[in-house]
Image 1: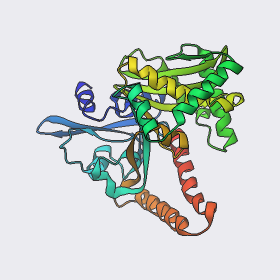
Image 2: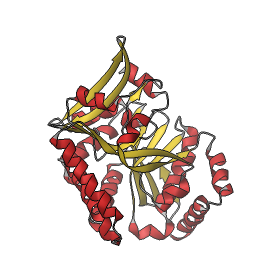
Image 3: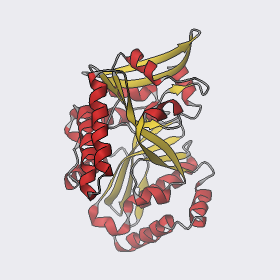
Length: 341
């Protein structure tokens, strides 16, 4: 583990790439196999890669709860994606949020996305000035609405790493209501996802774990976030707020509080994850490109995946509006189901 953690410190600090993430997932999913491919040269460990392994396929460990995938390796290591198939003993490796900076995987990508990132390594004041200079008013608007909430509801109160179990329960209730309202799969219907959250929240490791961050207006909980923390990174994971306070944008105000709080901590990067949302575009001052696709060798598993991507490509080329997006949505829903089962 020490070698793995040392390699992570060279630009691969995401908590999702940590050996501790793989261990937490394995504890939460005792009936599933989390495999680790170790890349060795000359008797030296040069890289590590984790995946959840089924009969013929592999996917990110902890999917769909995992927001990044990548090989933790020495910068000059020549990566061979197909060698990972042999190491994991599978016919197909699904790529989901695979780091595009690991260019060996780019030819296997079928879609490209980006995670939005807030870099506050120069301090919150410098970040705030940068957003203002860029003509982005999200922080100014959040401060204005915060003052309005103080007048109309109650004084705002920020808490980092809340230990109040009621805050977590309310966050999950809001999140599950969002899933129902948007007709999405409720990931918390599957017991292992809750076990994973509880495990991460119980962590006493100063370099890895999860925390609940809250914003109250007076005595009322207005917004709550559950973020994964590791190294210099706070990774935005589960965010929700009380719909009754929508006009005050409490979720944005909470992000602003977290970014200001980071000035007093070892954290310097808030990763907002994927998804093309306006608040992410406006808060972010950097991006982490990722790819989706698969690596396969001649097999039924690879053929099925190839055919699925073929259907998605044809559908997206048709001028059918929202209907053209249905095959891609169905594929994502199926992948989420595979990960949760």
